[in-house]
Length: 155
Image 1 (tube, helix red, strand yellow):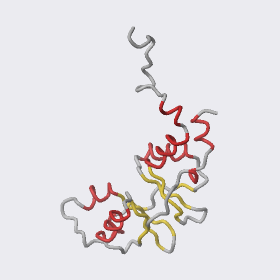
Image 2 (cartoon, helix red, strand yellow):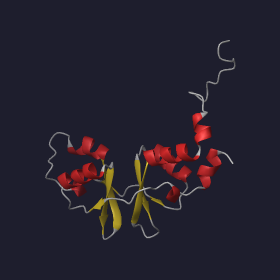
Image 3 (cartoon, helix red, strand yellow):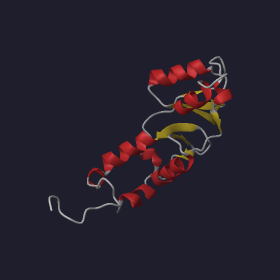
Image 4 (tube, helix red, strand yellow):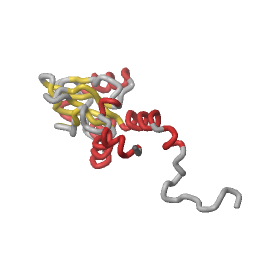
């Protein structure tokens, strides 16, 4: 089976490597940013009554928090991305890659059937998984798969 075929059938539960960090919408921005920095993570999920209601990412810090007129005393609920795209842990790795590419996301929340967060899938997680499980295929790719040399080296 090819990498593409495997990624269409393998669930993202194989890739998700860490529990989600979560805060409530009432959490101050400074607290959410400190949590991200201390834990070395790129985002926190925003939950209310154990349900996913938003996501706050490093990109949000740059685009929505550090902009003119923003105050760090605001609540994370004021600047979070509401109702983010989320995938159930049974979704395929391929589905996750497509969602990330279409939406320009670097992080996608992973939820159970009732909408409770169970993980976060990052671009780095997917990349690490593919390199770890398909090293021969990855390391043998030409620099540009569309530009394969037809002459041997040195000719």
